[in-house]
Amino acid sequence: MYKFDAVINNKFIEGKERLNILDPTTLQTGGTVAALDEQDIDNAFLAARAAFPAWRDLTLIQRINYLTKWNELIAKNREEIAKIMTIEVAKNYKDALTEVDRTVEYITYTLEEAKRLEPMAFTGAGYDVQNKYAIYERLPKGVGLAISPFNYPINLAMSKIAPDLVMGNTVVFKPATAGSMTGSMLGKLAVEAGLPAGIFNVVTGRGSVIGDIITQNKELDFISFTGSVDVGHHILEIASTKDVILELGGKDPVLVLDDKNLDFYSDQIISGAFSYSGQRCTAIKRVLTTNAIADKLVPLLKERIEKLTVGKPMDNADITPVISPKAADFVQSLIDGAIKDGATVVIGNKRDNNLMAPTLMDHVSLKSDLAWEEPFGPVLPIIRNDDINELIKIANESVYGLQAAVFSQDIDLAITVAKQLETGTANINGKTQRGPDSFPFMGIKDSGFGVQGIHETLLSCTRLKGIVINYKNPLTK
Ligand SMILES: NC(=O)C1=CN([C@@H]2O[C@H](COP(=O)(O)OP(=O)(O)OC[C@H]3O[C@@H](n4cnc5c(N)ncnc54)[C@H](OP(=O)(O)O)[C@@H]3O)[C@@H](O)[C@H]2O)C=CC1
Ligand SMILES: O=C(O)[C@H](O)COP(=O)(O)O
Image (cartoon, rainbow, N blue to C red):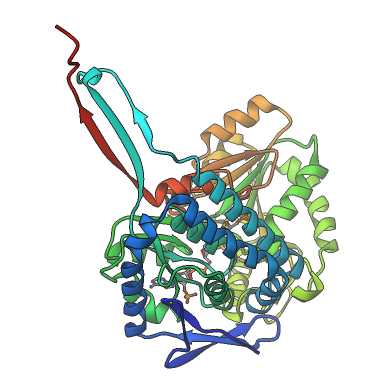
């Protein structure tokens, strides 16, 4: 049974109360973390504020050296962190190891990329620029709040924390409850790495209990949030700062426009829809195609789904339990609703509590919530329409706009359709996905705003400071 403490000012805080972390595989407690109260949270922000000037004033290289030591410890503890993730978010061990390795690389690349954000000398036209020199420095914004979701406990944490810290900000980090052990472990390793007290603080506790306390704290300068639309929009309304980046949900469509490479399309669709049991904001969450193509595609998808293994994270099953029985109930309600509206179950629609069989639904009606809601579980609806313009319209009618994918061997058609899709990113002949992490990642509409990705995040956690020097040429007559 794991026991982790919160980290405030490099002190380990047990909390007056403890929070049990449910292991979605055993549905038993997998460990405990601190359930902090308002005073603890105030202390975290006061520590971050107090630590900010000294940390900001270190050189970039000094900050990089601290964070490199931390990253080395994360790499050294990769198996332990991955094991914790299998317990608290039921991610299979292989994927959990991959996420840790991906994050170590993310941090390494971030620290390298930070070196390229040198102060710029700026010259331009007009405004008698010949008598001016301008230097624009990137300065840290101050105290940042990083809030991460359950599904990528280390990657969607460090993808905020590392850029924030390396650019001179200090951070208060609130991991998802399911992910709090991983988050607390990061705090423990940060102390072990010798990071200066107060620059990185981990606050744990249920978002429904401490969330508003955190986001309304007066010490806050900026927030980077990844999670659901409802919580993201709530934060926007009440937070003490309006400098907020939101990475929210998605309902990523894949438009299959020909049958010229259905085996490849099917492989991509299955991987895109069912990795981590569909619990990815960038998961493929609907297939839009014509009747003729669907008739050939559905059997290919079915035979691939039959090969997916269903079971325990430590056995590296493809499909593992979704995060909670409540989450499974929501997914089931979408399946049941679609069936009521006339959809057919091609395969699946079986569950053992929150271990859900991968499910493929065909002839899903636009009346069904499954066509529009984000399941965050292993279910994929097929929506059929023979008019390609209707398929584009259905794709764009979603309240979400994270990513989309277009499969076609006609590159002219693929580009034409991709350009019409109202999303942050449109993938041609490839599944929807946030990685590689060096790519800009952004959503529009209810999928959020602001841009993530290593370079973009380094920019978004900093502000420019201009020094304009005016001078007269003493040599002119
Ligand atoms: N666009 C993207 O990159 C991603 C989007 N998502 C989206 O996130 C959702 C699933 O993740 P999930 O963790 O369940 O999302 P939630 O929105 O439920 O929680 C996200 C984070 O917000 C915290 N939180 C909850 N309430 C508040 C509050 N009032 N104030 C401040 N923080 C709060 C949660 O803590 P606690 O766990 O304690 O409640 C958690 O740390 C899906 O909608 C998915 O699409 C997920 C990953 C990436
Ligand atoms: O939002 C998520 O769920 C993750 O950002 C998905 O990341 P990935 O597409 O690289 O798996």
